[in-house]
Structure formats: C-alpha cells, structure tokens
Length: 494
Ligand SMILES: [Fe+2]
Image 1 (cartoon, rainbow, N blue to C red):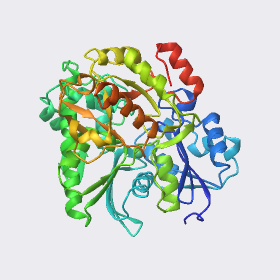
Image 2 (cartoon, rainbow, N blue to C red):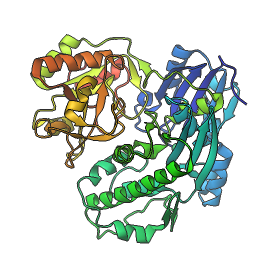
Image 3 (cartoon, rainbow, N blue to C red):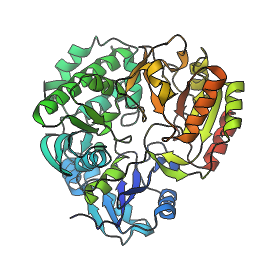
Image 4 (cartoon, rainbow, N blue to C red):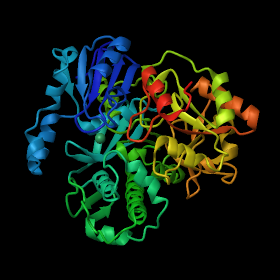
C-alpha cells in the first residue's frame, strides 16, 4: 500500500529515545522536528502538544499517521528477552492516540529498518544504491543491507538482536560514564584521547564472530555493562578500543556490501551513521563513488523515514531546516560586531535544524583563532573540557583550509584534517581532526554572509560552530528559549 500523491502523511518515531514528527505531502517535506526541542527534555522519547501544534500550524491536519516500527514485533522481542515490564507496557500506538489530533486518523506502521532505509534513499541525490542501516535495534534488526533499484528497496541481508554493534557501542558508552543512546558522540570524541590497548581483551570477552557481514556477540548487552572491569580506570583507553572495533566492523561490512551489491552509490543510515570518524574512513576508502547520509539518520529522523517508507516516493530535499520557524532573519551587522568585540555570538533564525547538529540556524559561533576559546565555550555550555568543537567554513575556501574526504560537507558528517591547526586551535581535536561544515550561499544565505563578513574583517573564513544550548538541555527552539539562553549565559543571540 502506498499513499495518494497529495496525502498529508504524519511520520512519527517515539517511545524509544528522541521522538520525532515529520510531515510529508507529495514530494515536499513540509515539517520535521524533534519532540525534545518543544518539551525541553533532552532526548525526550514522547510526543507533546507543542510539537503537534507547530506541525498543525505549518502543515494542516494529518490524513494518515505512519509509525516507524511494528510494535507487536518489538513486544515479542521484549518477551523473548525477558523484559517483561516493557512487554506489558502501553503500546506506542496508545500514546499516539492519546493526542486529540491523532485520535481518529488512519494509522499505518512500517518496519523500523525499512523506515531508516527509505529515509536515506528517498532524500538521496540518486535512485539506485546500496543501502546500509546499522543501529542499536529496531524490532529484531540490528543491521540491514538493501539494494535500491528503480525506487524499490530489496532487502538482501539482516543481522538480528541480540547481536548488535549499536548495543555494543551503547553499552560501552555507559561503561565510560556517559548516557547510552544519547552520548555516543562523546565516546567517539573521547576515543581520540586514548590508545586502543584493550581492543583484543574486549573482543575476546564480547565478540563471538566478526566476519562481514556477520557480527555476533557472546552475550546480550541490552542492559549495559554496569561496573564491568572496575580495574580499567581510563575511560579514554576503553573508548579508543571500542571505537577501533566499531570502525573495523563497519568498514568490513561496507567492503562486503561493495562486493555484493551492484552499485557504486551508498546510502548509510541508522544511529551508527552519525559516527563521523568512521564516515571519513568510509569516504577515503574508495569503496563507493557517492555516499549519502540523511542529516538525521538516527531514530528521530525515522519520523521522516516512516512517512517516506509508506509513500515510497522520492522527496525534494531542500536541506535540514525543517523545524520551528522563528520567522526572522538575523541582524548580521549586530552579530558581526558582537563577534569581533566579544569573540562569541548566538545565531537563532529561520527554521530549526532537523537532526542532532546545529548547522547555522540554532548555533553558537566563536572566533576559532583564539587559544582560549575552547575552554571559554565549554564553560558557557558547561561541557566536559576535552570535547572538541566543529568549524563552519565558506564552501568556496574549504579546500584551502581542510583536507576534506568529500568535495563538500554541508551537514558535518565526516571529520577532516585542518591544513593549519596552529592557526585555528579552537576547531581542532587532539588527533588533528575537525568535523567540518561547509556553507554556500544557497544552503544558508545568512550564515554564508556572516562568514564572508568575518573573513573580510579578519582574514579568517571560518567560525567555531556549536549548538545553541547548555549541557543537558536541547537546542534553543523558539524565541523564549533564545531569550532564556541570553539570560543564562550572557551571550547575545541574533
Ligand atoms: Fe533505529
């Protein structure tokens, strides 16, 4: 079954972590946002009235709802694995139906990995591709490989729970003192600080088989690791070891896919597609000619994936600015003046980013040349001092300053080497990598103009770019959030 061409489809992902809602009509993505940005609860797993009201304002009422998972299959898995409380808890469908707007609307479900695959494929700049989904778990699937041909997805391989690279990575995220299913990117950043000396020991204890495309674990890591190996006191060494294993498993899988699927195009989706260190290696591997990662490949992005899996049609991809509309352009003269005077400025304008990266519409920007800037911005955001910051650079000059693994990087999806790390200490991680965003005039005119103005005044064509929030809170979404951020941090937001 697929949707009539102009049907208003509300795609929903919720009940796991990081709920999302996306509205698709015909070939347009009309709206897409994260629940957390409206509730103020980071990684919020549940929908809320403010999010639904915003979608209704922009897109009108739903004609059909599409949920990103088949709940009964998930329930059977919960029962199989002895998660009795989850097996008998209310269904996500009951949660969706509890909102008046959704009470009587026809509702369809699609497979979780099918939604990830469709979300990648139908936003990609090509029709024919190998599609790889790797995440923690969706129903029973942990890895799936598809061949997309003539707009149809044919599944050619699946790995099932409890054998999951995503659960493995999440369990070690928890072991390193971080929040699983939320702070995996911090584990990845932490990995650069250590050496992978525990790699063999971890593999021996946890991995039964790692021969592509298979990855099997010796035990179920769904409940995490607790205080496993308390004698290992350096989380950086554990992080580096786990990242090294994940890289080998993923690159091995991709090599198998390149040999097996008759396509030189790759669509990569699922939460593991956010690992920009692996992604750089994938880009440099020459396994594929073109690689597309939808900028929100995790479960919040599966709201869009669900609608696209049901619609089975390509949509017109205009970029990730799909959420709440602040309906204002930034006062760039004020922003540049603040930046030159104080070195840090907030930018909140237009529609919010759909995805985990701030890409210029809800960003905190700073001068990357300042030796103290990392420390200062980490203090403003109350983040761990080791965490790196990303640069945003005018696309026309990106190649001059960075050795990029792809010609452009509009969504910060792979790391790159800065050619002059000593000149830009604010945006280089300890291993010399930077998670670059390139910006041209069509992609984000305001941000591009701001960068050009900064370049003209200082000779520096880039800024440090991080999300407009403080640790533990979601990004600034609406005007009130921006004002609260100004009050809390003393940083002006334009
Ligand atoms: Fe997922």
